[in-house]
Each structure stands twice: as C-alpha cells, then as structure tokens.
Length: 325
Image 1 (cartoon, rainbow, N blue to C red):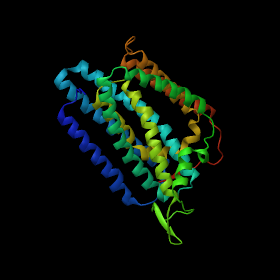
Image 2 (cartoon, helix red, strand yellow; image 1 turned 180 degrees about the vertical axis):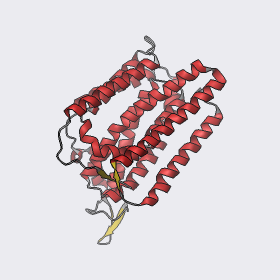
Image 3 (cartoon, rainbow, N blue to C red; image 1 turned 120 degrees about the horizontal axis):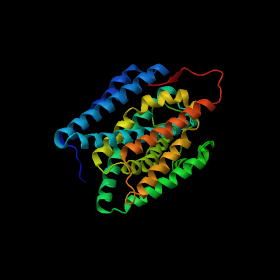
Image 4 (cartoon, one colour; image 1 turned 120 degrees about the vertical axis):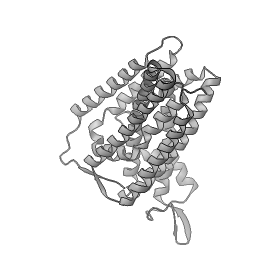
C-alpha cells in the first residue's frame, strides 16, 4: 500500500485526531447537558472544517517539499474532493441518527453518549476497512469494478428510497435485537442495562447504540468505495474520511434544526454516488481529472441544496435550539 505521505505526517495525523477527540469528548462534555443554538452549532462546524482545511494545507506543504508544487496541488485536491464526498455522505448518516433518536424518544441529555460512541466506532471501523480495502485493491485491480458497480446500485437504491418515510419498526436488525434479549420499556440514565423485578434487561439506549453501530457499518460500506474512485493513496482515503466524521456531533446539532429544509438532499447524494461509481467503472477507459470530479460533486450538491431551500415546506414555528451535550 504505497502512500506519498511521509512518516512524520502520519504521526502528526494520529496526534491531531487524539487531540481533537480529547477536546470534543472530554473538554466539551464538562459543559453538561444544555441547548445548543444554531449559531453555536454553526461555529463548531466551521471550526472542524477549518481544522480539516489546515491539515490539507500541511499535507500540501509536505508533498511540495518532496515532490514539487504540481504533485502537491493534485494530492491536496484529492484530499479536498474526498473530504467533500465523505462530508456529504455523513449528512445522510446524521439524518438516520435523527430518525433513530426520534423513534426511541432519546432524551437530549443521553444523546451525547450515543454520539460519542458512534463517532469512536466509526473511526475504528473505517480505519480497518480502509486499510483492508487499500490492500485488496493493490492485490486485485478488478475489485475496483465491484466497488463501482456497488456504488451505482447504491445510488439508484438511494434515489428510489428518497422522500419515503422509513419504517424503523420493520427494521430486521431491531426485530432481531428484541428477540435475542429482553428490553425494558424505560431509560435508566445513561445505562445500557438495568434490573427490573430481579431480571437484567437491556435499556432502550442499548438498542439505540446497536442501531447507530449498524448505521456506521452500512455507511462505511457505502462511502469508502466512493473515495477510492478519487485516489488510491491510503493516507488520503483515511485522513479525508476521519476528518469528515470528526465534527459529526456539531454537524448533527446543526442539521437537526434545519433537516426539513434539505428534504431533497438524498436525491443529490444518490446522483453523486452514481457519478462516482461510473467514474470507477470507467477508470481504465476514461481518466476523469480530480478537479472535474470536485466540480461535479460541488455542482450536484449545490443545485440540490438550493432547490431544497426553494421547495422546503413552510414551518410556522421553527426551533432555533436543538438538544446537545
């Protein structure tokens, strides 16, 4: 698995991620449960985006020192394109989190722990899957065609399902969990298990954690092949993925307040997946420049978001605050 990144940049990346997790999970958690305004959610989202762009600048400098400006420009553009794709797909992930929290009526004070565990699980899972995927591609080139076909089919399925109300009650994973373990009716603080009438029962929060974990797996399977269509460098694939999900909590609270206004976003994401999948299928026939890929993704998402805002259903009383940690 060849990578253009020097060893010191790998070390810096690991330290940066650990520091970011410490700030997000330890320092900010001391604030306790409170309502986060849209302004605060926007500010934190901008901070995470700024850190990601700053890292990309450092990556450009590292490549520039060893290989010159031309290659540095190309590689930093690959990071930016991958970051945008993964950030966009994370939006759909957040909408599913919101649906799960709403279905189980998870109290705002408990959502903090669920999101923390979900983000850590996503980081570990994606790291493993990216390294395995990079190794498979380096050994078996035809795996790219499987990834491409999978993305095209996923995009078509996403388009077909867009706009339809998901039925969580009929979710096979939820049904299986309820069959294999007794579940209590009430929350017991942030506990995953509780004792009722002398019996140990799982709390609804444990079911939420399991469904969030399953969501992480599903979206990792969808998103990781997408970025391999942009670059084969495992460093770029990994770092763009991780930076895209580091600010997941802040983005969740922001999108929870404006979810109804972007009701067409799933259609845009479906088109992006089909485009990326097609690009991967044609990788040995047509070489689509990274800048063109970036422009296409930006254009698709921009059109979708603008059209969503123009056709968004009017809500008489819009909440300016959303629950947070």
